View 1 (cartoon, rainbow, N blue to C red):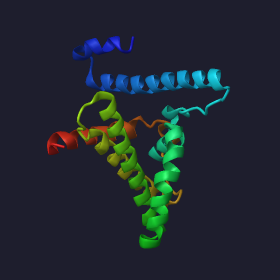
View 2 (cartoon, helix red, strand yellow):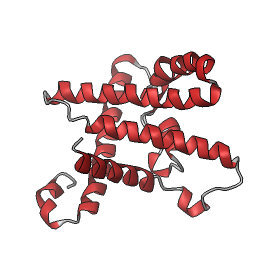
View 3 (cartoon, rainbow, N blue to C red):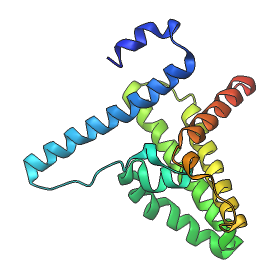
Amino acid sequence: MLIATYDYTDSIHPKIMWLLYCFHIYFFLEIFLAMVAYMVRILSGLELEPQFNDPYLSTSLQDFWGRRWNLMVTSILRPIAYEPIFNTCKNLIGVKLAQGMAILGTFVVSALMHELIFYHLGRVRPTWEITWFFLLHGVCLTVEIALKKAVNGRWQFPRPDANYIDHWICDSYRLLAVFSTFCGV
């Protein structure tokens, strides 16, 4: 049903289509990875960890990327990208700046890996939109963490609004779309 909706993109509001794309990606990954986990369980008897932890309940980008979305990749990127960059930078620029550099470096690694995956799957030259998306999220996450440290718990989102990550993702993607449209990226 979701895929059949794509035949009617001309008559559906773009924001609704964007929301449908988000659901499509999430459901595709959830179903595909569940099938892979099922096959691994049947063939080897091993139980794989879940890949998602209710990402739609995220309260921030930090919560989304660090504890809810694609947990396997998070657990891989932490020791191979974040920790080496952090440990290298903390002696050079200090712990506070090293955390931001490590976050940005981790998002760069993730962005390049996504570009590589898309290239090998589709044999299409990179447009770098994916890289810009991840760089934007890395910057937004770094700013979010810095703001959280600056206010030190003195201010929080009201609880009903804190349960939705949609505004973070949608707004940053809209900024990316505007940036790439007007700057020719």
